[in-house]
View (tube, protein in one colour):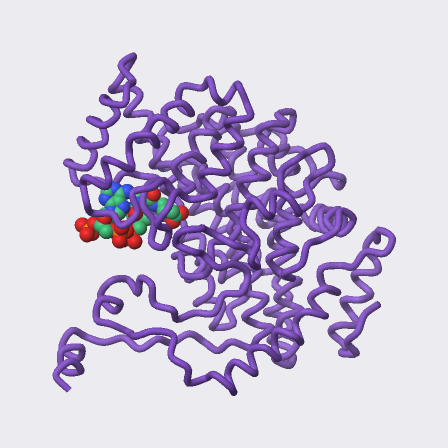
Amino acid sequence: MFRSSSSATARYVSRACAQRRFASTKTVREVLEEVVPKKQLQLKQLKTEHGQAVLGDVKVEHVVGGMRGLKAMLWEASVLDPIEGIRFHGLSIADCQKVLPAAPGGKEIIAESMLWLLLTGKIPTEAETRQLSRELAEKGELPEYIEKLIDSLPSTLHPMTQLGMGVAALNHESKFQQAYERGIKKSEYWTYALEDSLDLLAKLPALAARIYRNIYNPGKPLPKINKDLDLVGNYVNMLGYGDNHDLTEYLRLYIAIHGDHEGGNASAHTSHLVGSTLADPYLAYAAGLYALAGPLHGLANQEVLRWQMNMQKELGGNITHESIKEFLWKTLKSGQVVPGYGHGVLRNPDPRFMALQQFCDTRPALLQDPIVQLVKKTYEVAPAVLKEHGKTKNPYPNVDAASGCVLYHYGLTQFKASHTAYYTVIFGVSRALGCLTQYVWSRALGLPIERPKSLSMDAIEKLIKQ
Ligand code: CMX
């Protein structure tokens, strides 16, 4: 039963009812209709009762040090603890693995159940998850103009550049933008933001798979979306690996647990900033994707693979703790970072890395793969070397230390040159879960345009003297 009487809401009721409904399930919109007023009230109380409370000091080191640790933005879906790692509405990855529904015939968390949790803070039932899968599958085909746009791009253009272009161009369809131009009320923004976000998430697999097909398998027919499959099941199918159940499960897990990592990371923060201008969800997420494309952020999974393969080549048959240690020192002494290690917030091994390692530990084929073994051996050595090196605040692996290498094992071996490596695109499909969730919440909470104060060095010195 729907609760709001607004005309926008009524439109969503009819649209939701038009979709196939499972008995006694709610749609994600209906659950949000219940949650949004409570959160709006919570924010109102925070502002009126605690608006002047102090959460920390702003030091010069924050201003010149990339704002590291500065508590300065609101992000609802997840909070990152330096020691425990990520929690989604309070749930750790292990908690999520216990309670979030998997795909039929699968065991791993899927994107839809994680999206439901991120958006609503609630655990979806099996039927609710299936219903969301069905809705996304029904919206998943690309418009023809997007297919033509992507097909017209040179295969040497980095897949991340292509993904951002496709996502930005999908804003031709933006219901948020159309509604804004019609002059809808601010209180209705979030419903259109949700509509766009679900549309974009639904189309990401077809877009990302088309980019893969064009670069690596030109001319190969792309399968149609299977309405009975979950989002990642369809994605893997369109990538051409649909018969590989283990890869499908791996990507389900990877995409779900990588979906959000609080708000301060570069891609999330970028999409949040752009969204705060009321640019539509497509533009906001395209901007986030270009932040993700940097080597210190999402490109690290491709850098790790390249680095581990160089290590493998150089060490040949002599893969020992001692030889890996020497290779690590060689990397560090040449002034490069060790890719896949370190983090802006984490001060412990990344639980996402540990979850992917656990996945590997249950698959004998993965355990026997030389590159996967090398990742594991490197982990046994690298923290001590990085501690001795003494620069990084976190000598432990982040999620990227494992992810690309596992995909390599499963056949995503196309690594001709860095400008054609695909791995970050999969991260881009995943991170849409969190960034678009926050887009919806930012509009529901009426957050203002972001505008921090910047200072020149002279202005900082003047302030210090005062
Ligand atoms: N290897 C060598 N040196 C490292 C290092 C690593 N893995 N991680 C950090 N350092 C160095 C930094 O370059 C910095 O050196 P300078 O003082 O000379 O500039 C110093 O240690 C302090 O850095 P920090 O405060 O510990 O780390 P930051 O918050 O500045 O940076 C990160 C975090 C992730 C960019 C950094 O650890 C890094 O470059 N790691 C390798 C790339 C990587 O794996 N990125 C993926 C991160 C996860 C993600 O975003 O998805």
